[in-house]
Image (cartoon, rainbow, N blue to C red; front, top):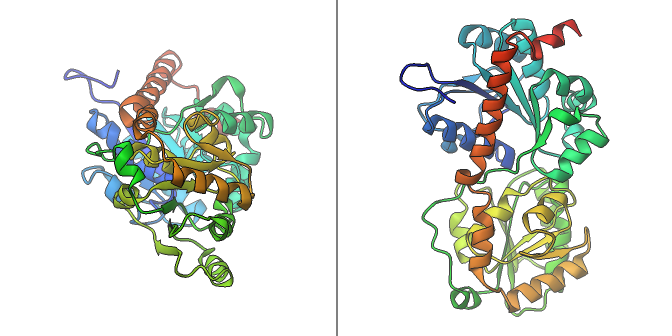
Length: 379
């Protein structure tokens, strides 16, 4: 339980690198807000300031910024833990897991740690991220739980990175989208202009190059592609658009904090990733009733139930992708089936899974208050 009038509320510390424009970062802001709304005492800690997802964090949640230097940030986190002594600290993305567990070990506080992994290739993003995956056999035993956002990712963590299987669990992402969406009828959707929407960071993993090449092959008259996102691959993608003479058919307006209007006008949603551990944007699109065309990555496969709720195509295959987009534009199907599936990933449905894990960990803490991440200090 998270407390009542006679008990102090359970205190939670959420930690990630920064509120940048990623699905994991949006999730952490929305999840902290959801727990605050449920009466928990919540604090949010980040390494550096970024405002892409700041609006998703409730303004009355204390926000602490540690600094980008890993060692200094860890030491400041030690001080915060000693000051606030949260019941549970929960971390996300890259090296945050390592820094949290180290800080708890050195602080000596009885805080229990829950760490989470959100990607297959995060280990490539820096030396500390690489260490965080390489050290999973140790980290996953020091943490009370290790969360993976899909069954496919959990298998990867256990089989490849040797995460401690009994405490490594799957919790599919709760996905925030407005509660007042009015999905289109099948007739309204069918009458929309042939606009294809994609949403994601402009990075190699999202493989927008294949999607742009697929648009060259799409035969539906007047079909256009909008890619929402920002990232280091922008210049390369712009060159590909120019090379294929698609300047009038493909646009990249940038990152949108509130992409809902784009979902409300698109006719098809496309995901071209070569790796996607979950895929929040797929759920967002389904909540708006859009037909989905997605590559066969573990996250989208689980969300779409292996093709039951959308069209699945092979990785890096622009011919298949173009054909599926044409098919979806010609027959967008029944929006309500997809809306119902999206509801399976709503905060109302998924946050209780986090609540249940936190309750379990709190019960274990009461049984053994000195066990947990503190063991890391002694090896």
